[in-house]
Length: 462
Ligand code: DUC
Ligand code: ZN
Ligand code: ZN
Image (cartoon, rainbow, N blue to C red; front, side, top):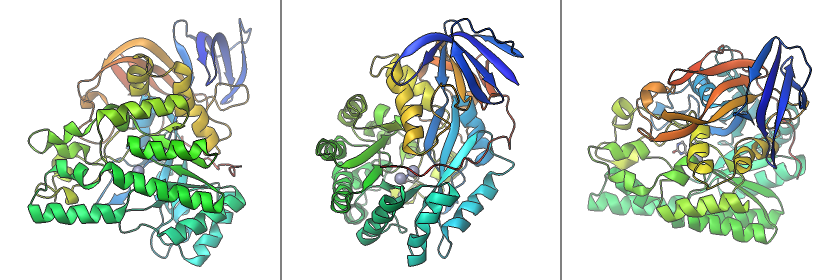
C-alpha cells in the first residue's frame, strides 16, 4: 500500500516546510519536493498541514474506579482517538493487589486485543509495591516494553514516600520513568472533613477540597525525592500555577523534572463547578479545574519549555447515570474524570495555535514529538523518513462546532459543548492505513477495530 501526499505543509517541532511525503508499507519512505513516486493513492494536501499523529500518553480506558468503570473501552476510546487525530495512546494499567507487573500488562493487553483501533502501549501503575514488584521494574523496562510507571500520592491505592524513593532508584538504574499524580492526601482529607461538618458538599467543594497548595506541596515533595536520588520524574496533569512554579524552580536548578498538562487545565476554570442543576459534576476530576490565572501560567509554561507534554487524562463517566449515581448530595462520591481524547488536537490548534498562544511547531512538539521521546515510542511522533506513517492531514481553516452528537466518545456530554473550532483533521492514518476522515460536518471512523498494535517501548535514557 503506497500513498503520496502532495504539497502539504509538513510540520515538525522545529520548523515547517512545503513538501511531498511518500508512504509505503506503513512507513514514511521519502520526503521532498516534486517526488516522482507512483503511488496507489495520491492526496492533494495543498493548503493543509501534514502533522504527525497526536500521541495521548494519559488515558484510563475501561478503568475500574470509584465504584464504576471509565466508560470508554479500547474500542470506543480508540475509535474516538482516531477521529480526533490521536494515532497512539499510552494507557494506564492499574496493577491489582497480588498481581505482578507482567500479569497486569497481559491483562490489559487482553482487553485491547481485537478492539484497539490505533497503536497503543501501557504504563503500569504500581499499586501493590511488594519487593518482587520493585525487582520486576527492570524486566518491565527491558522486556515488557513498558518503561514508565505511574504512582499516586492520593487515593486509597497511593504509595508512600519510601516506595516513591525505591521506584525512583530502580527506574534511574534501568532507564525508566516514574509518573506521579501529585496531590497531598492529608490536606484533602482534612478539608473533606471540614466540608462534611459544614454540609457544603456540592460539586464546587470538590475544587475547594483540593486546593492549589495540595498539588504544590506534593509536587515539591516529589521533586525533593528526585533531588535526593538524583533521578528523574514526570508530573502528570499539572494544573496550578503554584505547582508549576515549583517545577520551574527545580528545572532552573537542573533537576530532571518533567511536566504534562491537559486542555482542561489550559481552557476551563473553577467557575464551571457553579453550573446549575448539578452540571458542575461534569468537571469533577482530580486535580480540579483552577482559575484563569493558572490557565495562563500553564500556557506560559508550555512556551518556556517547563511543560513538555499535553495529554488528556481521558476518563469519561456519563452525566446521567454515573456522575449522579451516588454523588448528588456529596461531591466525594462523584466519579472523578472527564472525556477528552477526541478533542485534544482540535482544542490545541483552535485555542492554542489559531489564537496565537502557541506556535504550530510547539503544538506538534507537545502533542507528538516530545511525547514520543519522553516515553520511548521510537517510531512515532515525527514526519520523518523511517518513522511510522502516523499522519494527520489537517485543514487549518475548517470550522467545527463541538457537540457531543458529532463525537465518538462513549459518554453523554463534552465539557466543550458549543465551542467553535477552527481547524480539523480531514484524514488520519495509522501506519499508512486510513482510520478516519472528514465527511460533511464531522469526522467519521473508517478504520478497523483490532488494527492497532501494542508498541513495545524502548528503555528511556537519562
Ligand atoms: N483523576 C481523575 O480525574 N480521573 C482518573 C484518575 C485521576 O487521577
Ligand atoms: Zn491522576
Ligand atoms: Zn489520570
